[in-house]
Image (tube, rainbow, N blue to C red; front, top):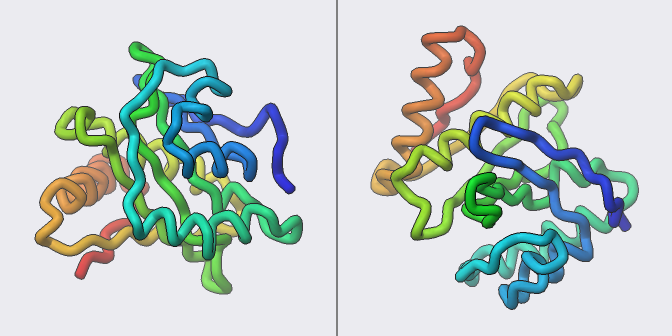
Length: 174
């Protein structure tokens, strides 16, 4: 299993994005601060939804355990706010790039860290990393328009496209 101690990390202005190993995902699912203790982070009041718990059990953990897959495209990447040394949100990709080089991302921030631009920074950080991966040709993120916060994140990422002509594949919303 992918339990490397020195996993690839992404650093942004305010955040460290850290991919979780199989064993760390088990601790993540417990929501008992054992993961925070292992990573030397401040405790959090993090919870996970029933949907995420099911995804962990049925998809994420089996894919991360599969040595034939690049687990970086299947695991949860946790975002750590540098100033507080605390987990503030998560992002995952739904598997390795498909035959067309497409990956899809999903993301969420913890309640007390919403409306601070953190999720946009998380998404931008993973997109910047993904573009450095040879197999990635397109990045898809979708949300329902009724999910205003998530929709705003995608709008902000789209506006970066216009400024930097880089994020041409983001924004596939329902």
